[in-house]
Image (cartoon, rainbow, N blue to C red; front, side, top):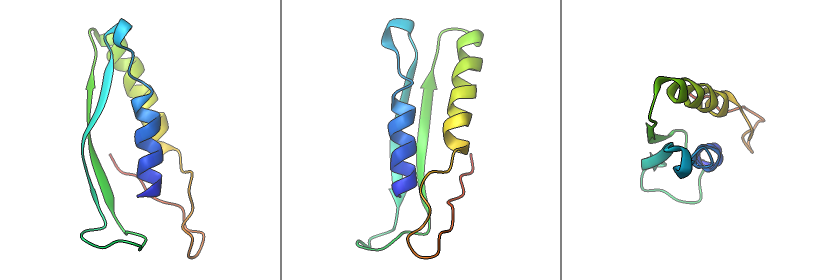
Length: 85
């Protein structure tokens, strides 16, 4: 969940209304109904909007770069998170 929150923060920074590009995370889930635990799975649904194919390609590259970067190892064993998209 921590890794996902970092990625969402970075993804939101791709929004540029003056260039008619937007990134929105509309749904997030993870950890079920538990708290104070490291959840084994978290997910978000991403909506990306753009005005032309050139912008689409730029946005796609930036999104992939953010999603592929691993930042936060687990606190119980130094395991890096896995991201699929």
